[in-house]
Length: 306
Image 1: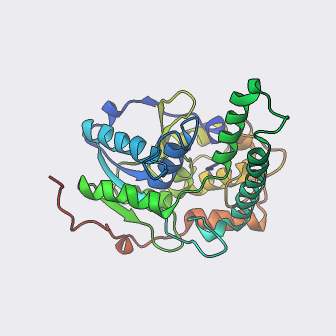
Image 2: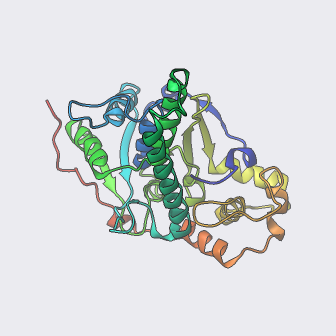
């Protein structure tokens, strides 16, 4: 989900096109791209193979990979560490326990509603005129129950292997956005391409974020965000720690937001905010060190498909 109200609190550097990024190497946040590819269409089952398996993610992400290649943009796809267990089908960092519980409850609620819709489809509650409305409600509920599967991940890894495009699986306890951000800090990447805004508090030098509404790519640089903090507060030499505190106050998957402070005023007020223990833990998550030497490119030995 990223940082709540991030784009309202911080102005972007502006809109960029893929042509503007020619020659740069980007870390692609694979999990958010998988979610966006699967949920971007009207129905998650709009495209299927002959077994009924959804293939939307394959079509959309293959097009994305080719688009990046066509614009001569280097790409390394970075996947979250597989943290799944019998009780939890999510891939995310276990530090998001509270957020994962909320997501699971929302999914279970949607599953119950979807079951009810299936049972009442031919009931008198739905006339012929309601068929389209019923289909829209069903598609909406199906999206709410959606989870990225290991099969979907393996589909994309196969494509990356065939095209000789590198990918990384995050070490245990770290998310793809964090690994990509650390790689940008040490200049292995020029920026992070993600639908979320977490890369900024993780320390990314540059974030390239496609807005789902207008489809434009907005650049957020750490340098520009630090300038905004300096101009709107009493902090003369702001640091990444100030960015992290502001983001935690706004609210993230790691901790709930501070009440009565919104994105329009957070930069002016953040110095006087006392963080809760949960929020301090969130800051620790954003600043958790990562040894760059334990990051392995999984398919470094693959040769290009011909």
